Length: 376
Ligand code: SF4
Image 1: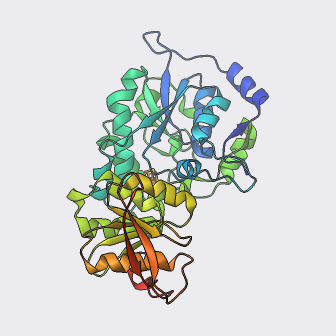
Image 2 (image 1 turned 90 degrees about the vertical axis):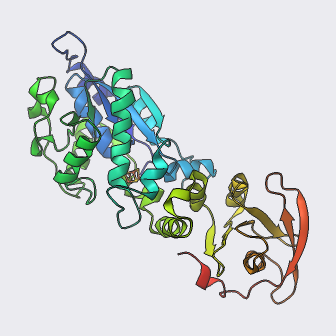
Image 3 (image 1 turned 135 degrees about the horizontal axis):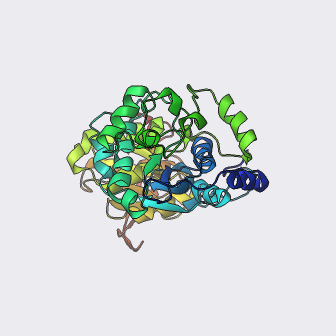
């Protein structure tokens, strides 16, 4: 299965040609903003709108927590050796619609640490996240693109937290978009929207898909010329990952939500995390790429690594005079090639330029002894 949508250009061209542009009562072309992930559901929603003669502009929201993005930055490749691509950019190109990647990180920290509507099972603040994204679209993008309404690939009942009838209504109300969000895959099961009332779009051409099954979408994909598509979006966001959630919970508990900074939550994507007995923290890189990326978080604490053996980078966040510091060094050393039971030398690094500011000697912690402090 591909990590990007792929289309049959002939089918797409035929669909497009059969559906001329629609105009509003003032003679302006009807235009929608499609909240576009590049996944199958939002791809189908975009095609269904194009088939109605509506101009579609794809909007891909960037939160900093997309797993594919992270893999791309880490230089990872897919099992077949190909590169990870931005599904939304590739998908929009295939659909021949414009796309904008919109950075929504401003204000996102509060969504993450103090969500008004709470977290899901993995500390995922999905309701507040959707409200945050849709509000951004409402405040800035609708007028910028002269759009009449917003479109999503949501399916009623597909996701327990955000795609139930009550939550769909709540999200659009709180985003200031009541009646202005069209969900072509399930619209006939929902309330009538303003675009339908005004005759900008035709309800009869929309669908009534419900639930978590994928069969109707896969069938529709075949009919509409979508040859391949990425896996469903459930595993695409760090914030739905249970391990990430435990680290976020730990960070909020120790720092207090108001004190947490964006770097504190971004670094949770990297390495093994330990909460030490004195309350300080250690992060140990799991591979070369993580070690490299961790160096970017020099403002958070101090780095160390084995001086005479191969081993990971450790990032200690806290008081360097505390007993936790020596413990942190011995945990980091335990993950390297230093012989067990013998003193090993560690380099203590200046925060931002990898200059060695000193050395310390520790005996690597016996393997397994670190587990009690591991946040997992
Ligand atoms: S999975 Fe939830 S938290 Fe992640 S981007 Fe989607 S709505 Fe936001």
